[in-house]
Image 1: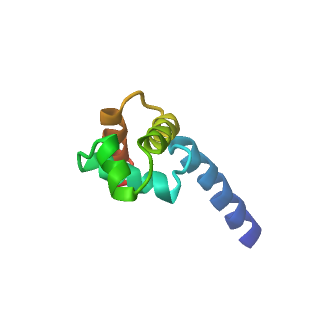
Image 2 (image 1 turned 135 degrees about the horizontal axis):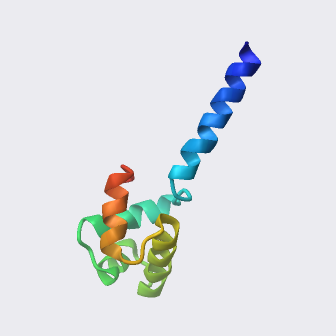
Length: 84
């Protein structure tokens, strides 16, 4: 019985993962929260003490992982998936 329950839990986790995007890193989640607060790339870079290009790379990764094409859709998807 325990093996059956374990197998069912594993299958459920596989199906759940199909509905969710690749997991975001802690830094990507932090940047996504700042995006949701209305910060620009430059403002995010200044607040985190990194180059704006670094933020642009993170934003590109976020968009790709969430399967969206712009910042607005990324923020909407993040709220939908309760990531922020």
